[in-house]
Length: 183
Image (cartoon, rainbow, N blue to C red; front, side):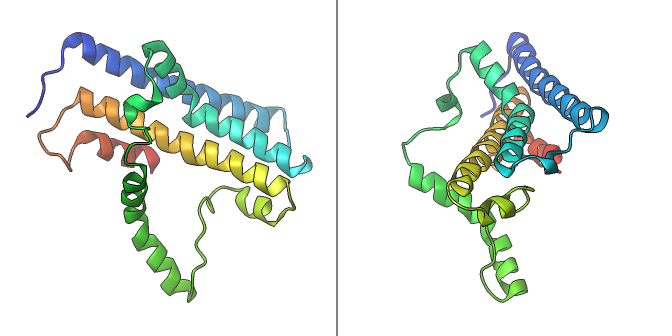
């Protein structure tokens, strides 16, 4: 059954979404300014420094806003389901939507060539580098592009679901808005 959302709660959820949006837009503008106007060329820097700068930018885009909101609201990340309880079930259910892409890639390439984070510009370079750069680089990529990006979608999903409750479990505004936010 749908719960009625009070005006105070609506303002709170809208405020949270606006903060996340403003922080992300500000970081994007700073990043664009650094690259375009100051003409900073990341390619001239050592790989680990490139990954570190990219990770900070990704965290700023996708993690800083939710971190600010969680600190301001005094909410733990556990509030959004980040718990050890039923962790294997959660991981298993999270993998299910990825299976069609894995099978498509296997058929297309005649074997398993899929690896996570291949859309991140640094992944192939980090994996081909030597130890310890490859390990440190992948940890940075996993934390910034993996954890914080996914967690931001979860927070946005949660806020929109609370703002626009739906009586349908599998068809509600949170996931639909995240799909539009991502693509």
